[in-house]
Length: 112
Length: 113
Image (tube, rainbow over all chains, first blue to last red; front, side, top):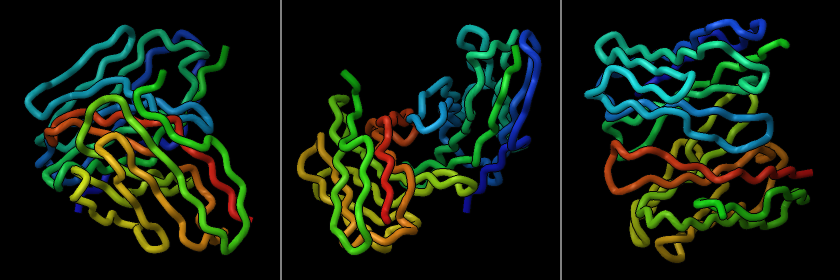
């Protein structure tokens, strides 16, 4: 059974800092890994999707990497802003009939 | 307009009542999912459907049922609501391939008193 872990559970940084969020998974037989952002009480917004054949994806100040063999992904946020404050979740889509397994998320607070 | 729409956005109901949460999508996706989110427990899969005639239980299906009325509509029912079903419920869709991205609705906040 796939297990997804996100460490740390919470992170607080000053504005302008570069930061890395971590996601690890136990079964490397995956199709893709997707990073989401969730604001309190709101839905999940897709940030980046990395297919299993890819090493990284970039969108603006966000860069996500994938190391399938070691079961790890990182989400790098450059020059953080207070508006980046949210919970970030990763989800792994594996060879289990199109179902995804989610981590519990990292709650990020960026202080002005 | 949102690609994946959930109604209602918020609902308060009493123990023992039957309640239906609805999801509709305009993405033309065959695959639809219902998740619930609880603090500290992440998102857990309740039911999923790959087409109108293909409905499957997820990891926490007890106390829930679903109906896939059309490719675009997937409803979740609580036959007799109980307080521990208080949670944030999400509908999601995915395209035809296992490596397609997930797309989420904005969620329904359900409170059972």
